[in-house]
Amino acid sequence: MQRRLYLASYGCQMNERDSEEVLGMLTAQGYEIAEAPEAADVILLNTCSVRQHAEERAYGKMAELSALKHERPGLILGLVGCMAKLHQAQVFKRLPEVDLVAGPAELYDLPYLLAEIQEKRQRIVAVDRPVRPLDRKPAGDYRRPGITAFVTIMEGCDKACTYCIVPKTRGQEVSRPAEEILAEISRLVQAGYQEVTLLGQNVNSYGKRFPDGSGYQGPVGRRRLLEEEPDTLLDFPALLRRIDASVRNGDRPLRAQSPFRLRFTTSHPFDANERLFEAMRDCDSVCEWLHLPVQSGSNRVLRAMRRGYTAEAYLENISLLRRLIPDISLSTDLIVGFPGETEEDFEATVRLVGEVRYDSAYIFKYSPRSGTDAAAREDGVPQDVKEDRNQRLLGLQAEIEQAKQRAWVGRRAEVLFERPGKGPSQWFGRTRGNHGVIVEHPAELAGRSMDVTITGTTAHTLLGALASPVPAACAD
Ligand code: SAH
Ligand code: SF4
Ligand code: F3S
Image (cartoon, rainbow, N blue to C red; front, side, top):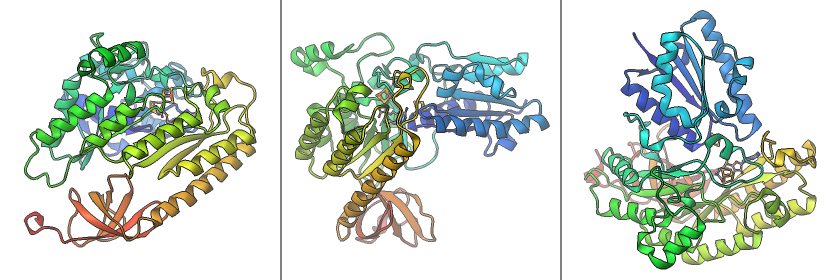
């Protein structure tokens, strides 16, 4: 039987990496990847619940795909990922055509779940596992072709930010063993990938719990190891150092012409500390870029969000980081209109953003998520106030970004080119600080790391010109 699979991701980077893993395990089972839903026998949507808008998009897309089933009743439709975990069998009420609902912890069961649906022709809801069994990953590997790749280093989240649904959709934290991560990165390097982004909801708590039950288990365990046996502590900074050493000493193929780059996301400000910043400073492969979501600049709101730090502590951390790595580039996430947020609270956020001067920021309007502590509060901020604060903060951030972009003009940066740009002869790449750069050049640049002189700016991107010609030996 021919089995063609179409899979689309509607979520964060971890969701995207999960989708690659699903493609890997299903192609190992004989599925072919279909580029369009019309050409598929199985359609999966990997979904997100972080804000209501994300859920509405996925429901809308699935409703559109459901129409295909009226023409081809044998088609299998699956809604998987975070929304599946939350909505469970209710998905069928809104979308009766759906055959499979499977949560993030059940993704490794997909080969068997799909086989069962094909055989018995009955719907399945698989959402009960508390955590994904990381040590039971089925065979198969798939990566979207390119220069950069994601490597998931941990699943789940042990924090309890009061607005956030992720701990409910993804469960408890579990870290992947370091050997597995190192082996995966080594395979990527061999395959020609030149940049890896390590992924986790809070990468800074890497190593707390491994699938076999080992790990430092919590802040007390970490502190004890740090004091008594620091060399045995496998936390995130130690992992960074191990990866850096492996790509430096290791087996990079000769055709890799650029210095290998390592990034990671997301860091929680409560757990990001000097030990991390020192590892970033010491490891050549780790880029000078940190995404450190602050969420709010008001201590009252931070407390109500249960973030575990104050604005002052956050700013102190940023000063320390800037002392250790002066040219660090910073990005953040901000939520406006959290329940009870007053004008004064909002102004504290404006002040913090003005003080840090982020290179980029994702600004979200608070979206109540049923089942979270914040959603039970009745002091919601009216929609028009939320919208107004959103616009004000976006305006401020745009001004800061433009000023920071203009300051780049005339400077040089190392740019790793990833893909063609939108216009003819254009190439898109990134600086180590994660700024997008567009360069016009007649020959292929993707995969090359080049010195670029920044010549101008657009709204979110820098424009540049190669500072030196492509070396003859490389000009293939
Ligand atoms: N673990 C990461 C990512 C969480 S989701 C972290 O802690 O940063 C990404 C971002 O979505 C969060 O940083 C937050 O800014 C935003 N977010 C999460 N829940 C939200 C909600 N209910 N409403 C609006 N934004 C939300
Ligand atoms: Fe959500 Fe907070 Fe965990 Fe991030 S750290 S995933 S915001 S609970
Ligand atoms: Fe969304 Fe789940 Fe990622 S809720 S942000 S897809 S962890």
